[in-house]
Image 1 (cartoon, rainbow, N blue to C red):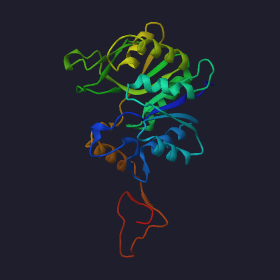
Image 2 (spheres, one colour):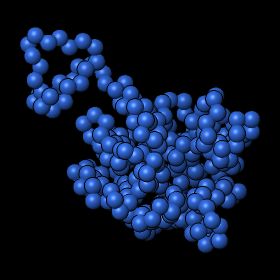
Image 3 (cartoon, rainbow, N blue to C red):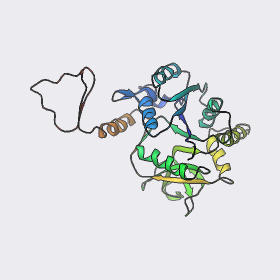
Image 4 (cartoon, rainbow, N blue to C red):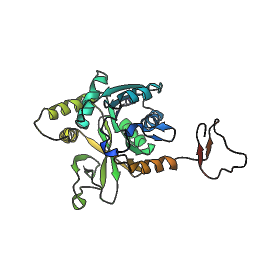
Length: 273
């Protein structure tokens, strides 16, 4: 059986667009902060090791939160400057095992999807641990994001950023849920991109685009819900997602429900309510 990848959770990005709300990873949906609920779902899928990339502003909070999750081996690193996803991964590199062909699963804390996406990604990797896998969100209407260029066999040959509605190479939007079979190979490609005198923050995309020429990248299609916390109003989408997951009547022991009250439908009543 293939070695399960080490989870890398990108939680260090600036939350400036979320004003007046603060750190996305610390927002509570239900009883736990988003980062904790995301880690628990990865744990339920069998992932046992994780590296969290924080920023100077949320570092101590993330360390405190993850210290309570003793069932996973979690290391927290800091990205001191917002220099893009590629730099965040390079900051995570020293926390990875110093051994060849260590697989990693790169995700963003603010992307909320169904567990099925991650289960399908891990299933694909287990079946063929030599390929790289990228989740592709299937949508008919245009979305201003990165679109995957996919061959009829499912091999990804490139990513086009915001191509315009008329120039989409496919209907598959790139979701940052990527499994790389060899972390060292990816990190080397990233270092080479950062050594180039190019003023941009797309080093990660450029590194992958170059690796696609010699390595097999495959798409894992996904049609389920996807909410990404980018602006404050997106909290409503994520809230509705978590509300939709309430099933049955869940009443905590410390909650008080009056004898004259009637609970109807799907209900969650939390601690000391």
